[in-house]
Length: 360
Image (cartoon, rainbow, N blue to C red; front, side, top):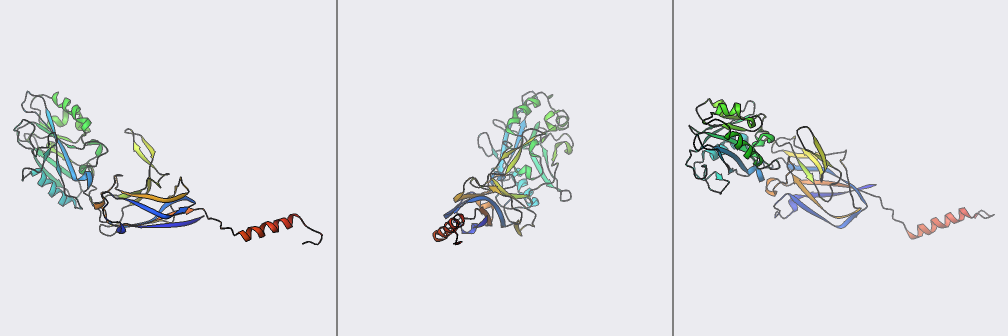
């Protein structure tokens, strides 16, 4: 066996790529390929922490127009600027969005209107105050709907979507999703008229599993406040994945199927690069113990490379800096036979198999 190497320098591509997905052509091809691994990788540790789905923050608000009417709900959203931002600055931006000073920062998802009011209603917008505790790194949101009966919750469309709330320490499993809305609405309709925020917190079953809070200001702020159970990871995503649909064959990635079981599925991941370097230094990887992927073809003239974030989502090209990667291919050592050597080899074999009295 011997090894061949392909060095990929992303600064050489033409910068027209939308996603961090690169095609590599090998005009002369590589013959006898058996395995491949990521030998080394280097990239400035300056990749974005606001990009893709993380740019859109969503929340859901349930509203009871009168004490005798049923609860209705609306999903609202606002957009964050792409790039890298520290948590303190992120909270300043989120606070400005909730304050909605311009009047068009927040969008009502049902019809695309830039409003924080429910359809056909003239309800008063809920006041939201956000804060970051620099001592324990926990994050909180406090709500105040005055005398109006409202319930507000953090929202993401589904389990496969990225959400900034998760980056701020709110467990993805407890963030309200589209499939939860009707169940929550049903439970709210079962509550007595004028239920306060403290009553909602104690009586609403989904409150034990969902990030929801009543907003009526008639009760103490603690009942109207959501606090993240974990420290946020907004500033320190734990690494990136390198994948290839053409080269990745052997790796398996575990995914949850219920609260107690995960199942390993085939994946095209070649390597996970840990992010253990300070911000703005270089994220580097080099190994003497390769994580091999067996190749299904013994000849290669093309392959792809994808750079994915810590959740396995493809980065937008604008979100990552240029990188240098070395792929190591294991190939069968080809035997180059000369025709004269073959003739001489067979002649010697004949003489040894047919000895004469002279010994020649």
